[in-house]
Length: 95
Image (cartoon, rainbow, N blue to C red; front, side):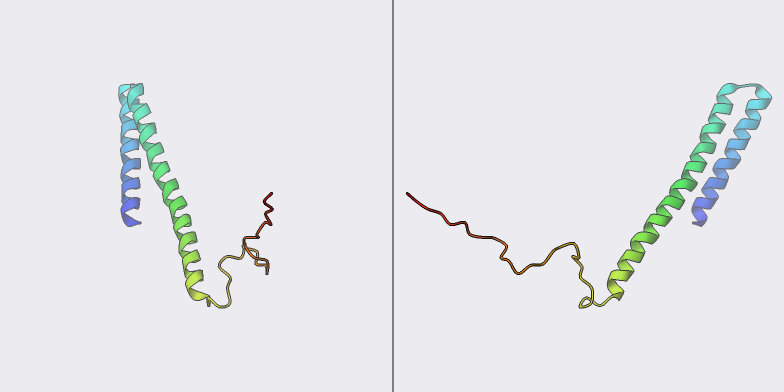
């Protein structure tokens, strides 16, 4: 996390520097570059939070499966169990 924070702060500082130079030299290209660098920093923060939430969700699922006793939990709860055989034989008549 610390490394991402340092990278984002560096990107924002670079973006502000580019925008300041754009104002001084009246260049649109530098202002556009500063905007793109700032949006890259925002995207990094967004991806960090999204992946943090996903990794937390997956980790929680993994921990739940290890903590619960396998005898008490049905892992395939969506499977319907019946007493009927899986394959039923169809009577065939040959002429």
